[in-house]
Image (tube, rainbow, N blue to C red):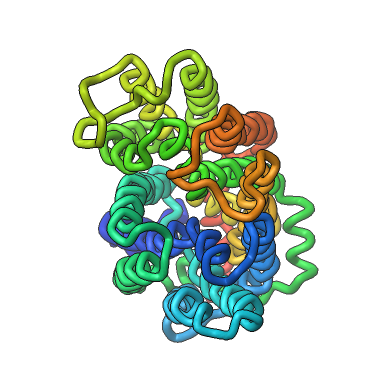
Length: 493
């Protein structure tokens, strides 16, 4: 069987390994911008002229706007079938919009008169978000046409996890280097950061488009025929598809916590103030990148492929819960100011805190990498389940309804961080690496970095108890879809 043909007996179609690897770069393309915008609050307080709470609130509102646009863009995806496919038009338009409007936001806004900066920034931000959604939705919607082999589908999470691990390790190092070189979050910082992010994102998008090209065809969609779903169909799907309901609960609460953990201010507090050296964040990511990926490889490559994606999610969840709790205890049991790594300022040798924290952090990143990266291929399972359940193929809905709720909930992360900072006296300016240490800052940093994660993981545990798609159920689903297609083919002859 060709790797781009459908097995008429099993309904299975597969992709070449390079296609799966190449298509993960679509997610990398949008993640680059996501990391860039982790620091947008500093631009707003420094150049747009807004306070900390308002800046955090704007970020929250933009995430809500992002969520509101999701169902409409998902609707467009589900009704699109062009000469260049269903998904590729959205990748092209989306990345162009990201490039243009992110550039204008940080290069043009502060050149307007003071009174005009805020409305100009908001309009540009809203347009940027639309482009972000255009490209993001494809990462999930195209999963179903890329491959439906239960053993192959988790491979996307392995490649995606590798890229996320590398990005998570490299970006803090880059930010630390840029802030040191240019003296903080100033105009030069945002310009040079953008000059790195935008071209790489554009290249990633081009590779992803090439990789999905041969699979972005009608025969790999749902039941192999054009469908034009309406909003009434959407309501039925949302009210009856238990799989997507539970996945949304699980992943959106995780995303809230991980967004707070990745917030630039939280990193400054924990590493720059509590540990005394902001460069430790980037160094820690670099030292743990390869071991973290090896854990991801085991969790997804073995557990998900052999035992199913649901069990992989639970493996990551329980492991993350334990390690998160132990990290918080460690920060109070030992002195975090003794945390130093080779090739960072002040390093004089390994300490007990350093050894234990690196070990626990490594385990946490490995476990959380499994539970967070497995979500995208699980979304494709939910879309196949809907074809099986109602004979409706709505991958755009699956991707965007997931994103809609996910973004509504995770939009609170920046606001939570802003409110926590404001509650301990930082109402006009966010804490910086020059801010003196205080027990209140330590509590805020640890709660935002690890406490919220624990809360999100507890939601995971409950949601997965009601998630119906295990390995055996997915095999039944693919067989039934193949049977329906075969009946359609026989009726057409």
